[in-house]
Amino acid sequence: MNSILPIFLTKFLLTVYGLYNFTVRYFREVFKPPYEFKETIKQFFEIGNKSLGLVGVTGFIIGFVLALQAIPMLTKFGALSLIPSMISVSIIREIGPVITGLICAGKIGSGIGAELGSMKVSEQIDAMEVSATNPFKFLVVTRITATTLMIPLLIIYADTIALIGGFMALTILNGQSLQLYFTTVFSALTFADVIPATIKTFFFGFAIGLVGCNQGYNATRGTESVGIAANVSVIYSSLLVIIIDMIAVQLTIILF
Amino acid sequence: MTDINNIKEKSLKAREIVISIEHLKKTLGDYDILKDINLKVYRGESLIILGKSGSGKSVTLKCIVGLMMADAGKVNVLGEEVPNLSFNELQDLRKKVGFIFQSGALYDSMSVRENLEFPLVRHEKLTQDEIEKRIRKVLSNVGLEESLDMMPSELSGGMRKRIGLARTLILNPEIMLYDEPTTGLDPATSREISELILKMQDKFKVTSVIVTHDISCAKLTANRIVVLRDGVFAAEGSFDELKKSGDDFVKGFFEDIF
Image (cartoon, rainbow over all chains, first blue to last red; front, side, top):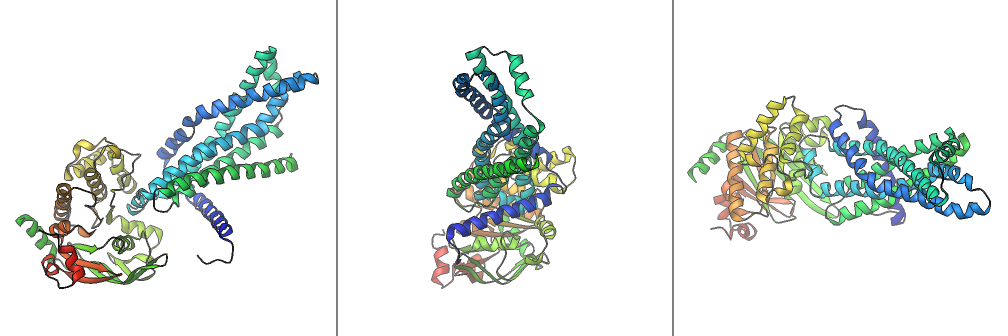
């Protein structure tokens, strides 16, 4: 390929263009019948249900460790009663969505990249195409829809478990009551905390599905490309999660 | 063997052109893989494309079915110019053209039943009973009724190719394109697959284009053979004609034949 741009920049721009093309094609195909309901529901299960364990354990540890770190610090200032509020705002607004988004980018993004990459190199995607079916609709639209809808649910689940983790740490170390903890947690939250934080998770889900599908679907021949598709999916989708988060925080500050 | 010869003779009677390729060119990277391909395939015949690995045999097949688009030249299949077709027109054409991949390309997350259902439920409005009947019929044609609920990972290489064939036949195509159907199989299974190709050709009256470098498969199935060399067809004829060829390259394919 002859290019006046450095190779890494050319590759980056081609990837961006590829993602743009995939996004346009997704929105063109997603509302057009026939719909692949059965496969979409299967992907809901694959993406959602099979990630519950990892996301739950991570969420619990985040909440637990956050409380453990905060107790000695805030005790010095006599602000122990502020810990539930601190945990709720930081988990719901930032830590829960971003950490869970990154975990999903690793688990789900790489899974989709490797699965579609392996289907590509073993000619299964070509086989769908020559049997006059639409592999984009069956493989890509279903997976992006599933990640867009399931990752927000996983994040809400992770946030809930993280709040429970925070309570466990506080009750073990300080004998915090359940009622007081959750009353303080919810009274500290406003719509401006919950709504933007929830909206951005849909974009996380879309980006993770989009990158994984794009890398897998465009894998070249050879088993090496399956590994590359999985690896690059994790890198790009993690990066996109961080970038979307940064943009979302800026917009939240401006709008709310 | 007499049966096989009868099937071949019957296939040769009709002379309607179903695939016509003129001056096809295709470049992959810096390599001119197809330089000037000209080919006519007649209805009901079984055409073998012989050639060394990497000579562009599979690329030719992929250009016929629109998986790859030609850089130049005409590819006409069943009266349609493939490069000029819209997405929907290409899909309609593909319903009439079956493609058997070298690996079988079974969908490995689906059972055999789901593999066979996949194209059927997306193209035809059938009841569950009718789908079941079609699946059982096509499986019985390839002799694998017992594999209905097996996963592709539980099947042998030969079984995978048979299921791949069944999945293509289930849509009743007019043309079958085989990409190295016997590669990677032992001689006995290779012969079984070759005989199955011939049987299906007779039973369903399909036109077959078979890409291979397995000369035993070519001997069993060919009405006509073309030999691909350096991006052009270098020789054409029946098996017996090419076997007597004075060209060293062509002779090379026939050296090991019994």
